Length: 441
Image (cartoon, rainbow, N blue to C red; front, side, top):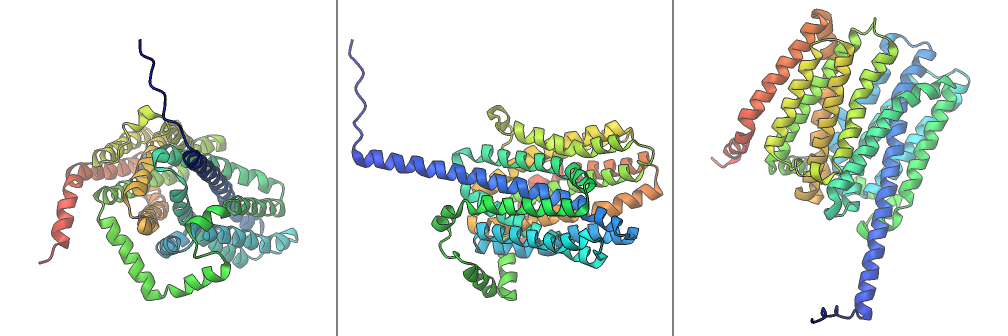
């Protein structure tokens, strides 16, 4: 019996090439893990500050309206800065942007620590710092998209994005209760530890400076970064934003995804507000479980997305988006039973389905959107989703005042049902409609 033919010998050049490739992949993996560590650390700190700033305002004697302004200051930058931040993240070094935002966030918190030690923090000061934190958080989140897109190998893209999504969901779960726990030890302690977390996030980013030199050679210093920002005039900003919107128009799947995620985010967040508005007789621990349902579901979904058997059903498609919307209809139908545990079950289901779809959408973006316009496309998507979340608060409060809890959730169920039917009928036709509207006359 003939013996198998021996493998061809590997010469020195081939061995050197394989060794360089191995070293490059190891560095890329290490840089990706450091980026995930930075994102997780930054997300924990952002979530804790979302609790600490309102609690600090209450401790300083703020009125309910002033406390509401503090919370509003944390959320409104998303409406103002997502589009400009997308241009910056596409045109400048994302690692440098993220490092700058983390240092500025730590510095902003530092301005509150000393006055907090003497109970001498003004409400205006808290609002301004919260506004700055919200704006820097928006810039960081979009720059993170650009950085991660450079660090994930195409062959492991879905698993890498699922790992990133899992880290974010666990950070969200830990952030809110951690904020209340830290504030128990005093506002100065809570604020100081959050500043330290941002510094740690910056340290993780500093550890991937070698990748920055290879991929973005034009923005090595803070001076060059500032010059790059100055070159982006107001008119140039508008042109860059328009280019991002046009790029979104080239991808029917992403247009459909914007509609699906915006309507579903509006629906589930409105239902949560309705639940909170009528939760006076609900034990606080049960309220916490209901609110944690979305994060737990998101963590479950992102972990499922790492399995090969699940990835087969996560192919980005219009039918997948329509299926997601019908899952929301089912989940919101559960909330009409009005028992708190049914609200928790609904948030768990929507969190799991939403996380799976997020991984699918991000995979499509990284594989199909032009890298030079990626973050601007993402910024349009996030702006729409964020606007839905902002609208959910007043809408849910209004529905809770004019309807019973059952009727209010029923109204949102009907809204979601209509949106799902509309998506089932129209999504396959939207590409044709877009072509007609944009064709020359």
